[in-house]
Length: 125
Image (cartoon, rainbow, N blue to C red; front, side, top):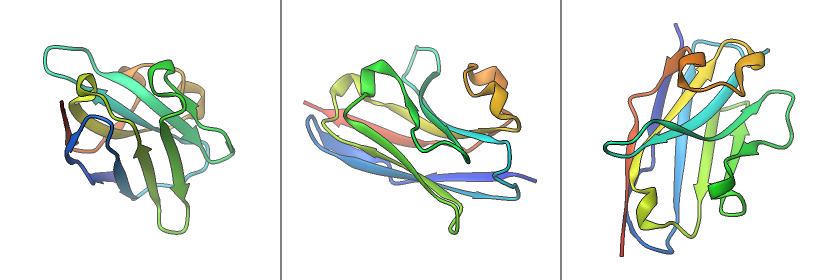
């Protein structure tokens, strides 16, 4: 049973930074895809970044390129999302998710099989 738990959310002023962490258990990295999504009130869930075991360069949404960095620690089975220069419009619930096949990395939320409960990020002016 795959279990994902996010941590590190909180409140920050615009321009500030937060580091999210996703602790994962119950799965093997082989051929899996892990991603970070976010969902603001009244909006659709959007993918922010994803990576696979064999990838040295995570994919990022255009809106976060250069500001967000996704990294993983295979030994600890955690995947972090360093978020810098945060903007108020990035206030959202942030989720980590796993797809059982890396071929679905490019897909939307429906292609991801396991989800954490989420962690709230609030960015104020």
